[in-house]
Image 1 (cartoon, rainbow, N blue to C red):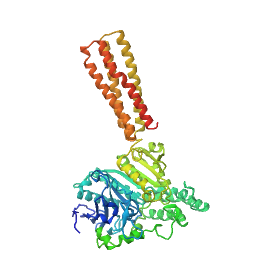
Image 2: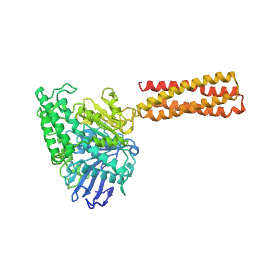
Image 3: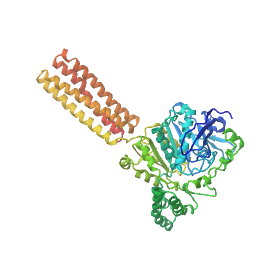
Image 4: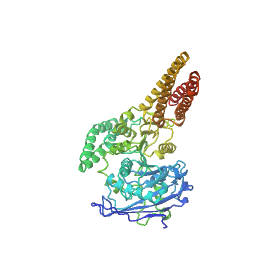
Length: 589
């Protein structure tokens, strides 16, 4: 295999780890392999870790498959996708949820996905931890610190090997147990950017997204009983007696999760066993699909038939086309051995990492399909309302708004967004592909919906600015009335003092308008922003005209000077007042 990029033998000294070596090897994938990627470049390969800070003697090889954006890849954001499990392959998501192609029914080839996430983003699907999908090596990772460390250096080496993506905004997305993975990986990048080591580059971390994730089990496990019996679809998945038993078991479960987070080790094993036995097993016993309460699970281990995907990925021709090494075992959707390694990590709360990143200006999107049981929307919304950060009060006070004409319900404040996607289960991109793509594109490009926008970022400041400008307009009109009356009666040089004071009123208004532009535009759509820009432009124009009129005054009579200044400023206040009213109407206030 001809390698397009290879970085070898970067050694990091560590008293704990000794020498750690990393290497990246990848090559282009022929467009015919994934039928939906014919117009975009695709890469696949491996990132090798020889020893690490946490397992000094073990080699791990992480498989990845990247697809460039179909539109303007040079300027597109960069998205990393992490499937959860733990132990399930991100390649599975590429081929069944959000990649440019899916496997046909008989497993002999691929067909295009018209709602691929690489429509407007460069997207990389990473099989991790080692042992998942086509990744291989020592499968002894057992917590998010270990996962985050390898993922951080993978991104360092990938961006160094492919500098054309290094300046792009970087977004880390995870699904399911990716509610652990994505915050951990993103936070490792976040911390790495603050404490760069020699040879490391700053990664342009812009946002984190988690879909139907497990992020804060201490809160999320409170909602299993309610989702099973009192969900918004009116589906009673369990009978009343079972529901009551689940309710009774909830507080003991939460107490055990708290001990896990306080003390770790054995307490985490106990919490995992007790909580899942008491709160998820009763649901599984019904035969319903834990990823979609509307459906039966059936005979497939994951409640879905992925045999066509497995067939296609295990053929020699596919493995060769994807540059899969002979050391990699046959591909399976999920590795139960990897899953077992994370049992003591399962009940750890990762909302603190989310809060830390929010305070540092990293946008966060938490979304959930409303018919998923196992990582349900009730629990996910609850933990976003509970997370401790400076925007908690504002987020909790924000309204839930309709999203995409009945496709969901969204709440957003100061960079944190929670979105419920209607009629979607655990895998939102699979159940609602068009809505999922709209969600992604809005979040990563900063579109004109409230989704992912910092606003109402400064709703209090914005409202205060608007009030100040309204007061400025009143003062300005009063000032004109006084100038006109006084100077008509007494054409003395004292009028110049009043005229200069009038200039000050305009400048104060301009200052307030500039602040308003900063405080309000992040939460406005582009049409509303036009009203704000018009206000600033009007005041800037008035300021220039009044300045010129005053500078010409020495050569004119007081009366002519007054006329010029008043004419320059008289209409501005009505225009600005109309602009403020138009902005408020546009924003629906």
